[in-house]
Length: 608
Image (cartoon, rainbow, N blue to C red; front, side, top):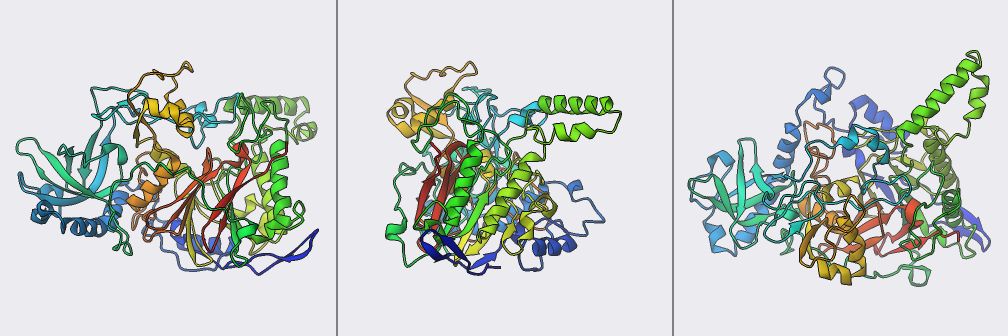
């Protein structure tokens, strides 16, 4: 539950830290048996409560991973079917063609040349998608990141491409197996079968805005002799409290104001001493550098030397601690921060497997030379950067110093953290955080995704992996010439880089397909009413049996994604604040959010 009000001392005297009520609601993401779930909530600082087991049955008597993943799609379809039908009925009231459509319960019951409305799960056939992602089965896993592949010489990631293939609206240049004559195909599936979806010529079916796993209601008719359904309208699931919004079920579109300036909520325009949340991700604990490579300017516009000195990332983490404790600000601006949420990326990317193998060989030979005692081996490797436990040790120390400052901390695990690889990721075990776990009631080890009610606001978020994965299966059509004129889009145009490092027909005018921005993708997940629609197809997820934990039952007030390449934010038409949290190890930035107004600002920690 919520922490008590704390008092911090600064150079300006005694200052009372802001306070915000806190109730964790992430229990639905905790995949454990009944016994473990009770102890897990107790050790994580939350109040014990009964947690349903999505496994269905006794975990000790059956291995849940022996089940088929078809249960996940069945439960997802059952959870969103009525909400899709509500959207179809709402839109059909103003369309004569939709009024004539017959509601069909199963795809197998569709009749030819009969206008019908059917609910199913989208299956997207993408020729450009590789059959097997070899990155999970080779040393490339050590270079994997949230947004693409990390070059050995540069901590900055190469922007990812899209697997979407060519269509009548553009030509894909990013797919690894682009074939303009073999476009993507959309199918609608349920328990009874599948049927191919074809647009009626009015561009109502935008395949680039959908991905495998999305549940939709489709209105159209089956063409005689072809077995394909000519689609006249597509309806996305609507939230129960969204009946007043006329555009709730429209296909997501690109937002030109995604990077627009937002109202700054600094000390000068604070609202009645409102509490703030500090959102930070990508701490990169265990990494020795802040930035390495040929980039000379970070997203905040502050010059950063290509040969930044080692230890600068540690220094910037210390600057965060000083800011929150009031040591670096005479006005103790950090006192308004009532809670810190670390959105994944706490542990740095693991070292290359070859380096670890070499280190193991060296250690083994040292033990042999020491007659098996290994007395000198421990000392020689005490500060080795190849120590696999170094990232979690540094993370534990940083979290303990945060808690010692009297600030409640919620830690969301991420890609390289020592926890389960499948989603929902389990909270870090307390034995991995021996120092910070001693601060009972201050450190809350949450699963990934994260969900809580803070100051009366529903806060939902992830480490960003679901967003990065979904971006590969969606696309936005842009004009090459327009991208060259837009500085923000110019950064994304680097997605068209060839393997040789040159621009693939970069000067060629005409439409091209590029992945949607992280902010657009986040908005799409709200439109889909699902946090991770690509799981378990491409995002590894738990084979839940009783329900799909990623279905959004209500719209969040605040929705964040961590480990993004830059800061961006917007408020959707339904009032949800979307925030892309920049990766701290690449930008040195964190985000402050006013709990009352949801106004936000980005703060930079620069040691130059």
